[in-house]
Length: 283
Image (cartoon, rainbow, N blue to C red):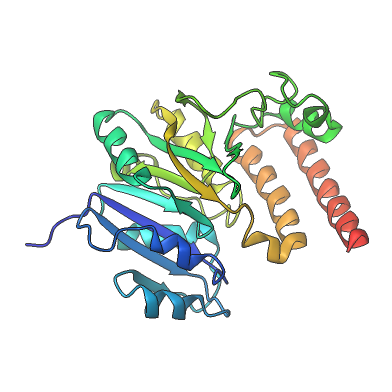
């Protein structure tokens, strides 16, 4: 009789050859509690070969085109069977005992809708990884630069939670989706990733639906992981800037439709092209 794994780790890759090796090396190959699936979005840099040659115990799903982060994660959900699903970016390295600690917390708190560990920069300093759900007012503070001028303010920096030290366990709105564990029953209840958000804001949208269902989301610093921020998206930064702004607009249009948010959408488009223009001037 085949054992059902306790947790399914789903890693979406795209040209991730520089980081996928170390990411997978930290996941236990001999544990019947863990199954690992890599969903590759048509990498051309040898990522698939690294996974298949060095980690034969990992299930590799090869896409013939880049389907985006959301669709690829949904593929992994459909193909996996664990009681819990851990969405893990390839540029994240779980620290010792992080996964067992997260599983233990989920088991002893069955009411939890999702949980995330503390993320660290490669130099082991704490990486801010929790945010509030965005509102129109928060976006105005961002556009005006007030969140950067007053990074610890509970008013102006409320979206990025600049006042939070990320060292204490607490309920949050949205942890960074780079390392996010969700019970499968919750995904069945609230739905999987919305692929209208192919790259950005899909984790925010998922967390919003989890919270709307009345389920708490926990930030859990007793478990930690190293995150090399932006390892994949930095390869195509101008395209990612436009995609991120478009996704924020779609988020507001889906969850907070209003005339003012239509105005916000126009501002986001203008801001995206300004950022891209400035980026090109610097290069």
